[in-house]
Image 1 (cartoon, rainbow, N blue to C red):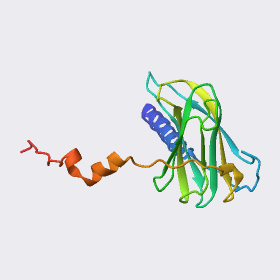
Image 2: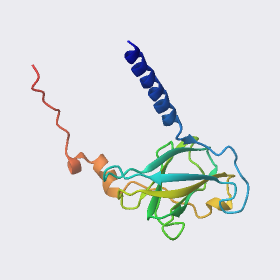
Image 3: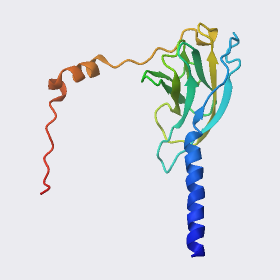
Image 4: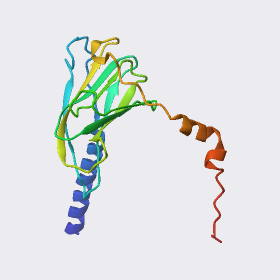
Length: 182
């Protein structure tokens, strides 16, 4: 009986630890800065890419922004050729490879499209599985701030993909699945 109680206690602690870890990815800068110094008043986040048995695993966090704010994400230090992808809560995607120069990606959103958590992903530019550390600066700034001058344009769906969704003859109709169940 004692072994069973000990096992249940360990499982409860592990479950509580795991649930806390899930929430740990929601991070935010509590201040919207008006500084005109590039990356001034930004929050420094140090991260690590982990190669899990030859499988690529990007670093991901949820970082907050409000509508209309200038939001800046900059990988300032890395020993690998990194890429940065940011997905807004409304689905708008921003991606950059070397915008900050010398293997350092930089995403600048001059006017955040929606309020909420922006999914920020740092990975090797070609999706390679690696073990390496990096530093990401994250800053929230007032609208029109120099930190977001010449912002990163959002990605758009290619014209072929758009036409494919409109014209099912490109992809073909989807036939219903047949079941062999009795």
